[in-house]
Amino acid sequence: METGLRTLHLIGTAGIGGGFLWGADPSQWMPFLWLTVVSGAAMAALQVWGNGIWLIQIRGLAVFAKLILLAVMALAGTRADLFILVIVISGIVSHAPANLRYFSPLFMRRIEHL
Image (cartoon, rainbow, N blue to C red; front, side):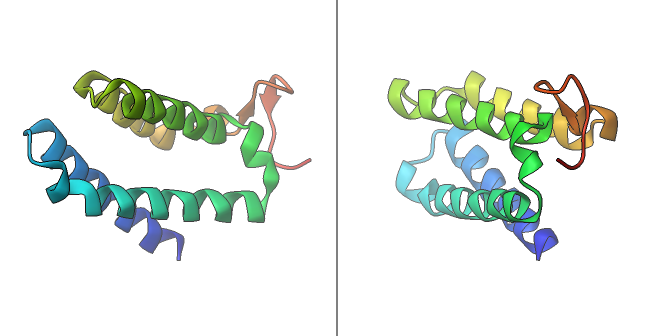
């Protein structure tokens, strides 16, 4: 299930990026935005349901940082630099070594369970 959600999330992000970065009318890429939001929310819910520690690990905190950036974009207008920063955060955190992804600033060490 998680692999399917990740795939849908990537499709949505590609659709948003293509439309947003090339100046397409928002009505053309809005379905991709909803696909990204719904699949992202579902992935986050699965992580929290499986082990709530995700909320205080770098991998969960990165999601919150991306949501803040997207909220800024919603309020300040779509900005390519913030959109690209969201993608950069995603790429770095998702491909980082486990010691970084599972690191908790609250405990100042890698932590996988409470």
